[in-house]
Image 1 (cartoon, rainbow, N blue to C red):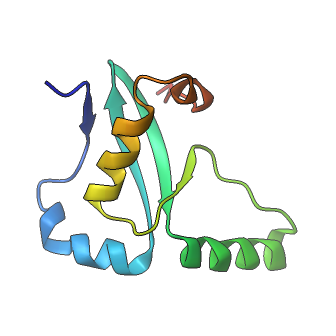
Image 2: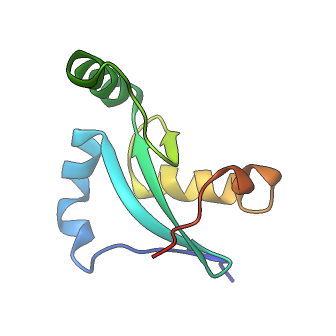
Image 3: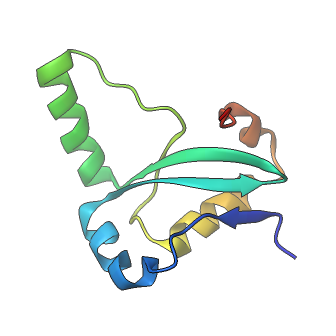
Length: 97
């Protein structure tokens, strides 16, 4: 039994390829009854986003950011399985609303 649930829209499979191509995804994941909003990035998109933010804001910050090789469900699930029962989970903020 899974101790987590990735809160995907019902039609996610229809555009999952687009998310992977885009290289970023903000999504809610319920882990042990707590909901976290994770911001997943691939390295290429992250570099582009950092540069864009630095050019316009002179700083870069995203809460609960995770960099994975490619933004797809397999990598997201692998990340969750690797941190779910570790102290690393406590480094992420729980969604409050």
